[in-house]
Amino acid sequence: MIYFDNAATSWPKPKAVSAAMERLLSFPLGNPGRTSHPPGLRSAEIIFRARENADRLLGMGQPERIAFFGGATAALNSALCGTVAVLEKEASPVPVFTTVFEHNAVLRPLYALEDAGRITLKILTPGSLLPALKKTPPRLLVMTLCSNVSGHVFPLAEISRLCKKSGTILIADAAQAAGHVPLPDLFDKVDMLCAPGHKGLMGWMGAGFLAVHPASPVVPEAVFSGGSGTEPQSREMPRLLPERLEAGTLPVLSIASLSFGIEFLLERDGVERIARHERALKKRLTEGLSVIRGITLYEPEATDGPVLYNRRGVDPEQEARGLLSAGICTRSGFHCAPLAHAYLGTGEKGAVRLSPGYFSTERQVEEALRCIQRLAVVS
Figure 1 (spheres, helix red, strand yellow):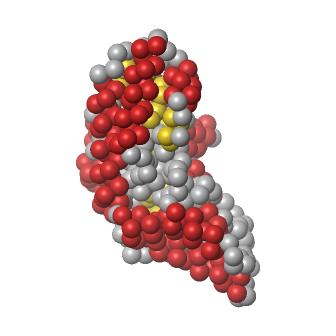
Figure 2 (cartoon, helix red, strand yellow):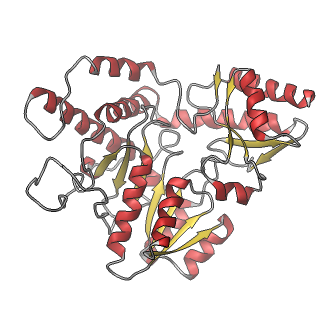
Figure 3 (cartoon, helix red, strand yellow):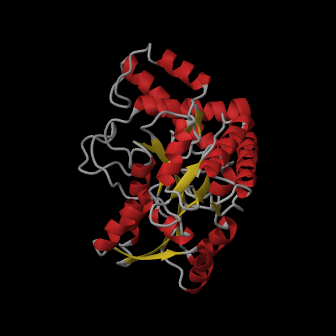
């Protein structure tokens, strides 16, 4: 099997991560932060180590500003809704910008806030984003660091400069950047960053985090309420991070896998090396597809992220089934980012996405290209 669906979740996981998880499962684990007995302390140690590792990934130096959730979607909801809750105390509704390349994990919370009358929402194309930031800067901008559809990357340095100048809060969705490209320089340009553990960070599904930059003028209000392990007699969630945002029992095992994945990335190989490897695979895929009859490539100039294509006259789902029959796992459709597909003009049924990862090889890329060529000849 050739697995080219790493934009959805990475596979396989590193052997070091699987081995560490097997060792971990031999220990009794309790509820972290709620007790002083060994199983509970063991879980608390796991969570603290994970904060330190996520902090190392970002180069922040303040692990307490990392809050864990059940995934990047929950982290994004907390960042968006919690930040709006702060900003609307100044003026309501809150002016918010986002882009056509956002995942539904960003779009749907924003739509809900808009429908509730709490924000005014403007969705911008790549060409209109910078002019809009210069002319009528919003109070909040939410954007992806790398599109999960085509790998589109916005000019973050210029966007960050404009946001800092106008006082716009900048929240970044790093779902397709974390583990794929170095993050410290990118994180320094935003106020908050959200990432999942199961994609480029090589962990299991079920965990993600929100990082609040030390220079951020805003710390989100608590969106979820419940047990926190501290200040149990208070009617409200604790005021300090990370407990302010972490309600209920954390997914200890998924967070542990995220932590082990980050250790693998930073200590064994380094994210810079991973970025070079994945960019080389994408470049070869793009070059190979560009010479196959009937293939339309979308944003082939993008250097990071997945490769998106359609074959003339062929339903993308049919194309994906043809690839699967040859043992190649891909994803077709709209990839939970319908506005991106509308902007790219992929048609009524979306497109086929190829997303190689760290463990993908040049040989697998060549086999995929041969398969796509065979499908083109047959059709």
